[in-house]
Length: 434
Image 1 (cartoon, rainbow, N blue to C red):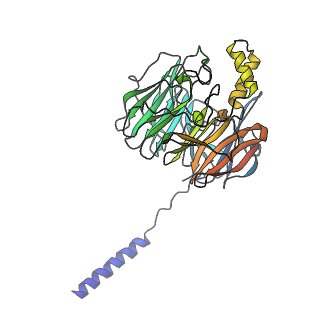
Image 2: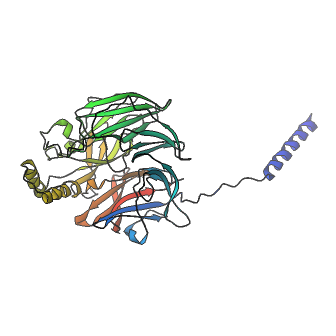
Image 3: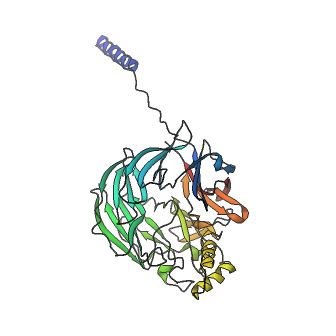
């Protein structure tokens, strides 16, 4: 018996040795960077718009001149997945393109492209094999494979909410993994008004991704314009509670000040975990929470979820400057000139009047991050979470700040990372990963 066991052991070791000698297929090295950072900017002049981007192996610091890097005809990231960017192509054509940073040239290159029949709107990547994009009009919703860049199916939205307005689309998309459902938030615009959103309620469509079918429409009365601008980061907590930023009307509907219609003021809404209905008792206005309820109009922009019910956003953070109030009075009296109206828009949307805040979505509190200066939030702030840190775009022309701050939630402290000194407005700080 012992000799038999010894023979079996020797035979097993011989088989293992033979297996170890078999050739192994080497892992194919990617031609694209799978780590490092991409910094991008946009420069607008009377001659047109230029886009710049530069690759950095480590997170950049100090002053950055992006004009020494590469320029592009178009660069507007709509979704980031690992080391890939999803957007239109680098010519700005009407296609969905997967972009990456070439190891050979250090520049952004087009990896694969899907032709579209209408204008691209939003993109959300759910996994290596599933993504969704929406189109600018006609409520188009399409599922696709981000790896192969092949279309999976169009989602039939014929039973969804219709308004009859000039344009209807889904500009904010949320995926909830707990029940494999997709939530699409309707934007409806009448081209004959100066508003961006021409309803007085918020509507969301639910798509069941188990069968790729439309399921139902949700409605929250007395709220408007469900987008957050920037990267349109979904706000979903660990339990599956969905939080949605709504912009209100920026005063474009003539409703100004604390006594304006509820729907005209911004707020954050909630769809509780395990449900497909809005919580009609949840309407969190963080601008009011920091004592700015008397502003003529309010902003909540660039939201990003961190963890444990905590999110970050850029909100109206100080009293309206006198010059802005004077122009608003002229607007209300219908005596404002075109030049004055343009000045009003510049002061309201691009003046450094906003603050980055920490939001406790459960307690409905807002806390100003004191070591980050005032910023112009309507620069469409792009926010990111990476390696336990939050990266917050900050623009303040008066103090020559045009770049990113890194905030550490563990210590509650922030530090300035870099300024883009040439190349226009800093728009993106993208962490590439494998």
